[in-house]
Image (cartoon, rainbow, N blue to C red; front, top):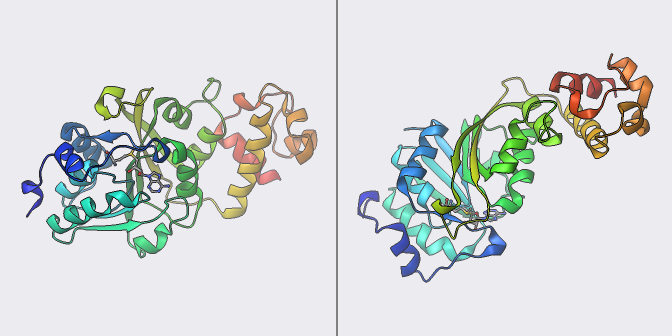
Amino acid sequence: MTLDDLPPLRDTLDGHGLIAKKSFGQHFLFDLNITRKIARLAGVGAGDHVIEVGPGPGGLTRALLETGAQVTAIEKDPRFLPLLEELAQASGGALTVHLDDALTADEAALAAGGPTAVVSNLPYNVGTPLLIKWLTGRFQPISLTLMFQKEVAERIVAAPGSDAYGRLAVIAQATADAKLVMEVSPRAFTPPPKVTSAVVHLVPHAARLDQALLDALQTITAAAFGQRRKMLRSSLKQLGGESLCEKARIDPSRRAETLDVEEFLSLAKAI
Ligand code: SAM
């Protein structure tokens, strides 16, 4: 059997008696127009290596394989393994499946030193910690194309001064170029989630921030946005308050949401 001979996704799921589990954040995409569009937005093609988190029934996986990419899939729910094994066989060796929890998986080992893109319709309950792991950890992907709840996607790309601007925007934009590239209606998923979703495409900066600076940035943003309505002299008191702001040449009477990413980096360097 080849990819073209595979039965429709819904039939595959029914054939294996599988029903979506809420605890695993399972909302499946069966519409190939949507999964193909996500693969296109990811910009992957023949010869590229992709890590996909949460293949589930394999809709997005099929679209990624169609591009000619090599796909390494990490799935936590063992119920999907027999179905994914069929897909792996039909892919003629282009798909490898790992039963693992993406929160603790070693993607750097799976990438084996080669350039690797991440593409995923993420389980919403772990989307943010996974993004932080990929942007600040040992594994250095060349790009990330990820489906989030739209509200989370907006927080990733938010500009200073907006309500959505916070820790996530600062960490994401200090480490990558991030764009919201597609919105997806709840109706596109089975079962439909309560909210609209959106795909964010991130390209990590070529020059990685060093680990000490990243740690300092996490500390500063946690303190500053933990009390976002307060002035920095007060929200950053434990970290040096006014004298820290002076060192970074930032007015201590400003509030966290008015600082741009460069200004947060200046504060992080001053710690
Ligand atoms: N990719 C499929 C699609 O688009 O139809 C399924 C997406 S569904 C939103 C999320 C998938 O992630 C499910 O298959 C779920 O079992 C899996 N998952 C949930 N938590 C996970 C984790 N911590 N590590 C790896 N996979 C996980």
